[in-house]
Image 1 (cartoon, rainbow, N blue to C red):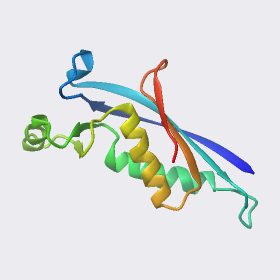
Image 2 (cartoon, rainbow, N blue to C red):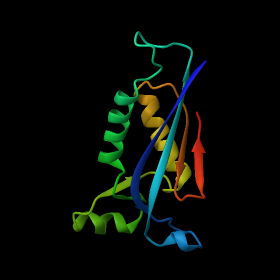
Image 3 (tube, one colour):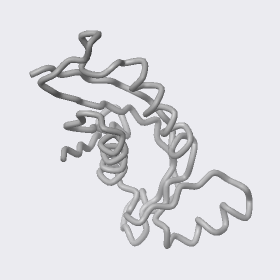
Image 4 (cartoon, rainbow, N blue to C red):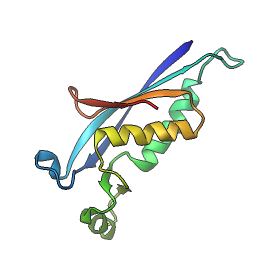
Length: 133
């Protein structure tokens, strides 16, 4: 079994609706992302996944979808306000927790055919959440 891990970084904001704590307020994170992939076969170049291709694809999607955006639940009233201000917002159908953002990234990688086994998102240097299919 072959395994690779790729780390990426991106910045994002979010808030949690109906939450009794500091995270109910809009705030931001400098996220560190770890993508873990495994497989039995290498390609003709001896690679499980080409790091350059993977980083370009996944980082490109993150840049377009998540980076420097407010990731909010689609029912959050802040979504409409941010749109009227032409601010970058990413509404999602789930609460924008670290767990759900990790799953969102996992699902993207899976949809692109990568042999993804786990996504870990560090929202701070001490707190992370992982999702594995």
